[in-house]
Image (cartoon, rainbow, N blue to C red):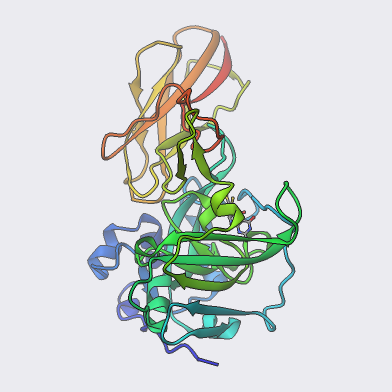
Length: 373
Ligand code: MTE
């Protein structure tokens, strides 16, 4: 059994407090790049006691982090029960030194921690299939380097422990997804064992999951058992039959990066509002990029009005926004929100009519509310 050598201890941990660590992890980019330029905003930390991390998370930014209990769950099969003492992860395939890691190997290795937003590829506009958590884990790239990538490797396949016959899958299929080696080598791609300062909850992938920031959630494979490096396109069921964009003319394209998107947090659909002012709030996110602006419309075909970003826009993390609505008169309103990323991509007004699949749904979130005087 190969024991993982430590991938590096915290070099700047002593100079700022744990509280600042977590703040910086959440705000990513800024502080992180000051202290760890070249790591793309990831903070390398020695393990902090989870209780302390949780307390700090509670203190800050409730609008930024989704608690574990509120985080959406998307499982194709039943949640597997995994005993961490018996579990191990294998990293094999086109590598010169295959690795096998136990749970305690993971815990003994210094980790990185950062907030990332995860959205399900099938999340409907305004739907609950999106959330942001602070993930702690090991940079995948460092493990792959330790395993020694062999020339010609192009693809990294994540295998999950869950399998079954549900949802018309061939009997006995297990959940597995592949990503391009380039994405796997991005310093933000993690194998995560903690979510918001707690060991991963069973439904979210205990003991270890991939977190592939900026790409739709299907690539963040849970309950990892094996990471396989290959020089071939992966032909698994969930790679070929699902998570594919299909056009009316038969054109097919794999789903990868999250598209720019946004949603209301308040008011909610059907809410009755009273008064002359109302603070509208929500979140906007932009996959691998960051949010440039968020706009609101208070009546269909009315003018788009700019919302205020409540935090600095950070890549791969959603940005909270707000809008102070000065209500002129009572009545029925249809509110719409749309975001534009920093490269100028705006959410489309209507869904591409040629699309036959139900992924990448990012038309503006629309809600109806009534205002009483
Ligand atoms: N990993 C495994 N092993 N099995 C799954 O069914 N679902 C994927 C991904 N990883 C899935 C998985 C999908 S479609 C999404 S959107 C995310 O997990 C959801 O992660 P969450 O349940 O932690 O929110």
